[in-house]
Image (cartoon, rainbow, N blue to C red; front, side, top):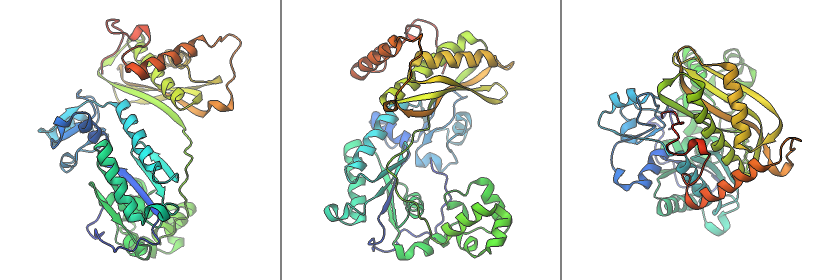
Length: 410
């Protein structure tokens, strides 16, 4: 859910000259909520909050009518319900979001190989090489939105500009389900009408510092003497923001995205107080991480856990493995060691998560310890094939099968 500041001064029509605007930023609208509607069309045109039905869950997405009431990502579901008591709350389906994301990116790559995936629901495209066969950037953007809607039933907004910065801000102002072109000749004029918080990289703290100094718009930021800006933000940040405010962005669309980690976490309806209650949750999360690693042909060197106690204190612990792995059994073993070493907080555990980090391609080679025979990974790969054919619930670790009584509450 985008929280970038917008302004009415950023008009919806800046002209039709896209000759110098070859960068597209595609941003899916209310992605998780839109996927839920695609999965269940009866939800269409209903106010929707995604994130779990427990009062202790948090919002991951919401439809725009609900956002207008103040509901935002990361907000406790209980508060969201108070703000939008008429909204329907549905649980997240993370695997479905990943599948739809993969389909969206596949559509984007059918227009140009120059696609930089930024997150599960947004990407940059450089369409300069596609113009000869597909036409102007505005035409390509229109075709992209139409295909995503026709094939997946999802809305998408597209920003078009001469740089990644302009394209991203433009897509934010095109929402919902729209398109905004900023001609190259209008770049500075477009940027200077924006609030300073609209610039990528200006977070809450930086925005507060600038606004306290009387700098509220990008135009005002561009006019601040560099020495003054350096005293406020530091040398590196001052130079970067000064350039961006004046329309300078030298970043190119990068097609290779380095995956840094995979993870899963869960918030419980009631605090868990024993290792025995947490063990099956960690096991399920570990196998989820490992399955996603195998799907991407990746392995990880580091296993970490995240524990949030009943008083909202959050800690993380991690360990580096002797060799990289994509085995759920190995990940779960190390995660449980970390949990036992940390212990159960006095106030219980509100949330627990598992993460595998320091990833590398499996093609780079994987060392196998002398006491490992590879049987566990072979079994997990066989499980992958069965799940791919018959669904995620078709097979899994025995301790997680229905009736085992091992899973914690969601």
